[in-house]
Length: 110
Image (spheres, one colour):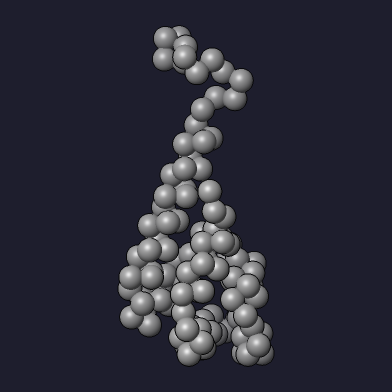
């Protein structure tokens, strides 16, 4: 299962250089208290994701990226990220729902 950070990096890798510049521009305009102009001027995809996760937390960073991608008319990419994030969350929830050390064959008969 990919981490949230990996999903975000993979999504931003789909943008060409001009689109990434637009993404950075929209990010610093929408969230100037969290993302400064100087931080975004030379930021690569990895720096961008690290800064966003530090500022917003993993799940909110997904929402912010989806929001900005939609404003850029990158709707397919936004939808793909949302779906992959939901799938990763579902897989994570399934993994944690099985009792640790429990007898998986007898959990329903107790």
